[in-house]
Image (cartoon, rainbow, N blue to C red):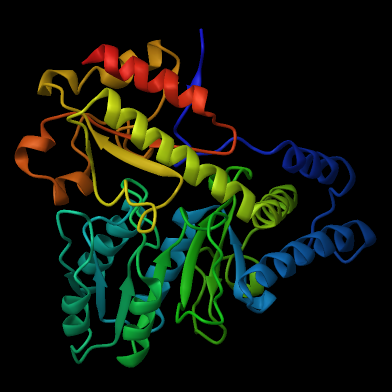
Length: 379
């Protein structure tokens, strides 16, 4: 049976070169990076080389890259320390953020009594930039947390506009950039971003590792206490092989960015054209069919099927060898409606099955043809 993996927004296949780089480290460089002997120094050198490589890709200082266990930890580190240590009393976000941000904000509001405002979102999943500007006029110490690319519908935030507004009103800007890192060129010298979160397994790297960008002299303090690793911002022995894997994956993503982004843009457009021709009443959620305003790696479709099809559609696709999702992988096992779609869709469309298909360089037009034919047969 043919199999198709169209769930790359959940996680990606590790590149062979990344596996090779990690295996070499695990075999040859097993010293603790905090140890002063030669084995430790060898591991420390690998960690710092990776940090420098990654920092160079974003045009920032190596000291501003902090390795974590992934995007969720990076989000928690920034948001919790911003309130606890930086005196943030007001957070502006949206209701279509990843739960790593939303649940953390909810906890901070309960624990510290901070003011939280959620900027309005249109039926296409676009935030109200004018309202954001009005909310920034509040006489409070403010942090804005809005994701770079929405992980369910693929909408791209105008980070330049948000960053400039934050700077104008002396607010800090944090963005969950998990779906953007490794897919878009992000020049932090020309963007007013104070913090971002990244996760290696979203760009063909290993799971369980990521990093935070923390602007120099931010005053952030650690979430996890213990040793003084990661400039004192993240205690615990560094996972050297994972960090090297992250470096290899990100460098390869940037080295191949032009070629691979073009390939994926064409593949996504082919998917749009194919599904529209075979299933005429299909709808596209958010701006996911607009290649200039959404990620080229994913599309979210609302299928013209009855409500009773919702509960079984992923199971039926799985039986056909097709992997996709109904939303974030962190909640895809749930039968509840996606919180993102609940915010932007009307009641009628919410009753229909919506699916997220997300692509990688390992996918082909043959994969698209197969998936669209299966979906057509299910109508």
